[in-house]
Length: 187
Image (cartoon, rainbow, N blue to C red; front, side, top):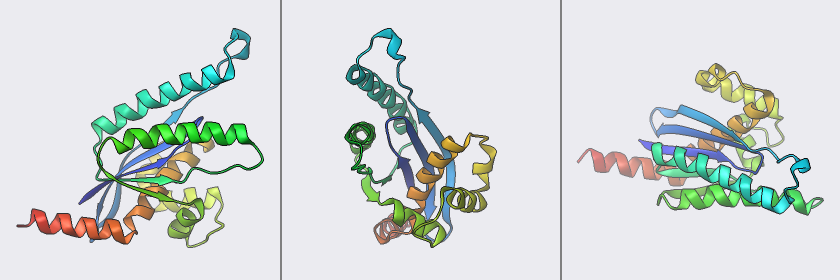
């Protein structure tokens, strides 16, 4: 059995899933989390870059707590998007992504990264699948996700985190690791 944490990282919205994977039984979602950070009200006079640092600190505190209490053998990340039209948005997303990735690196787990189209292909078999199709497909496979009564935005990020874990579970690296762990435990 392999413990996989799937992550859809960003600055404003982060989805995290904690799953168990066994090659013969598939993936089982154990828990999911949504972390949201909001911009500070500009009326308070906080500079944007200082506010970004405050938000990174929020991300650090919340994700570190999750990672400490839910150990993983593998971390599966949706890759950080490059938004060519908006450098500020790309910078903020990268700050959030790098923060979560850095915390995960400290655990010594295997780190994997997948593109959004790869996640869609693995989950729905359609590279251009809509967010709604992704959510519906994942909720169908993992009924526990329906128990979380979340707003659409939060559901999207949770779905992407579970999709990252599913993609890792389909990765030959993880399958081989799970089999090797199983053989080692059976000795």
